[in-house]
Image (cartoon, rainbow, N blue to C red; front, side, top):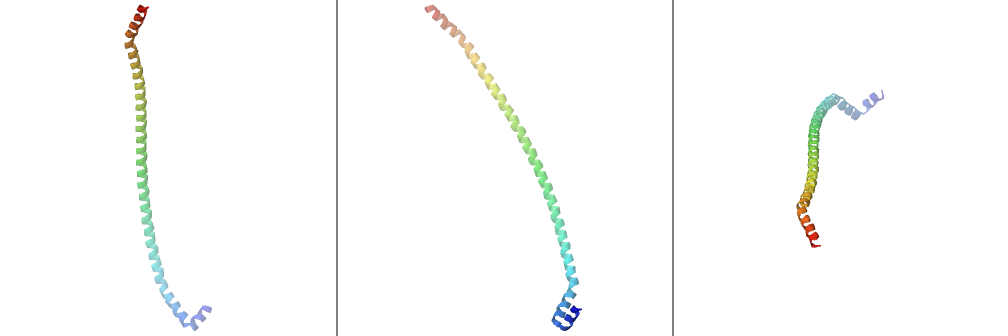
Length: 118
């Protein structure tokens, strides 16, 4: 009731009210259109996020596979290194044995000479 009294006695307020009330349906339509545009944008962004997550999972899977291959290669190289160290040690021992065996005749000769000199 007070609103009606104010509208009757204050023409400026009445004009403002009429302007606002006749534009209200247009504002609702604009708001609905804006809301629909935002829904579409949200849907697009969600789709892009899903695509990005799928791509990221693919990259992660590829990186994990590459890491595993690298670790297998590292283990293989470590095994090769150990085998080479064993072969080197064996070869050194064989070489020492060969040197000792090849020196035996000289040692015998030296011992005979020493005995003969006495």
